[in-house]
Length: 257
Image (tube, one colour):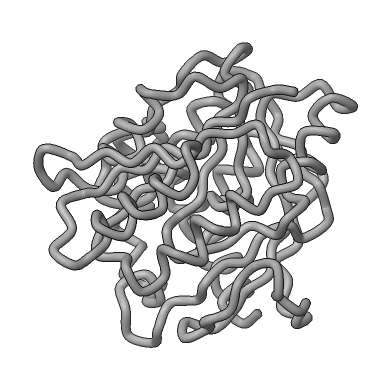
């Protein structure tokens, strides 16, 4: 079976970390390593990670020397990856048990190095486990196929569902940006001519942010998107403006789910 390296950044995530980690360990595809970087947490996250690592040797936590943000935390984990595939999960989200099994089967059939899936949304205060999750009708549906031009208008790939083939693409790192670093990674892969393809079935569960948080404030992401288009993708001002308008419209639609 192919080995999957699962990348998880952690910062003060003790309240949600357990269900996230257990959702990875409960995968029906068992050949995996969970590479976790603790980004200088001040809560009990690292103690919990050490306990989880004692219980299952597939959990491989490491503490960052200093706080560097989500991109650096993910990149430290990617640098330790030994797997054929690199997949991503944040410490407050969850995978459903057959996520990797079904995604790997899809990769084998489709022969594509970048894949993603549809996913459910749950409330911020959800406290259940992935194995007990009851489908709730709140689904962010993934388009069957996305190319670079379509991705410029909207980030169709939920980071909690993304997986890339390390044997084909190499160990691709995330740009060191304060936000939208995952979006920038997908764009950099797709700019090289790779189309992303999706399993339409929802196979992960995304924790919606509480009202008033930076992530829940779509206007707060505008300057980060603009910087991505102008500085990372080097788009012209008119093309960046069109992409930003499309992204705002799609984000508003998704926020209503």
